[in-house]
Image (cartoon, rainbow, N blue to C red; front, side, top):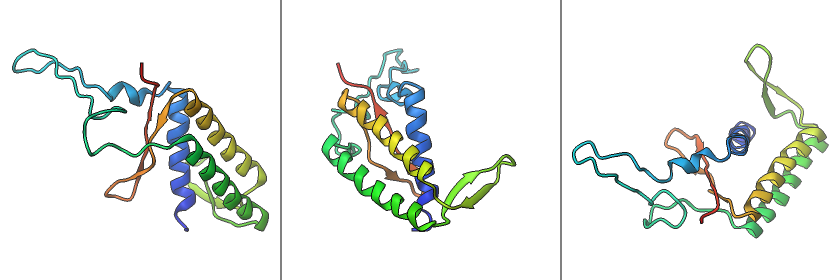
Length: 146
């Protein structure tokens, strides 16, 4: 579990980036680049929700995400209540520093999840984390279809 705060930070950064950028990741879901050989446009929908491939990412369901949120909040609340020193952040020197979890950290984390949940209720889809070969996590969001 010692890597969880760093991975959590990466996931939070991605969710925040998706919220701020209007889920720009969805723009890459359909490839409409002209084929240089023929000039035809090759449209790929296999990366978007509802695509036609078995390699689809797994998407959160609203009730499943709500349950996950509550479990995670309980976990991080326990860290804050016990003064666990496993919260990693970047200081002004651009170095990662470890400190204790605070109630403000737990509240900010939960507020971010509530924002994602609100978007999900509006029809946005969010992938569950996909672990990359190097141990990093990839997540994505898609605007509502239609």
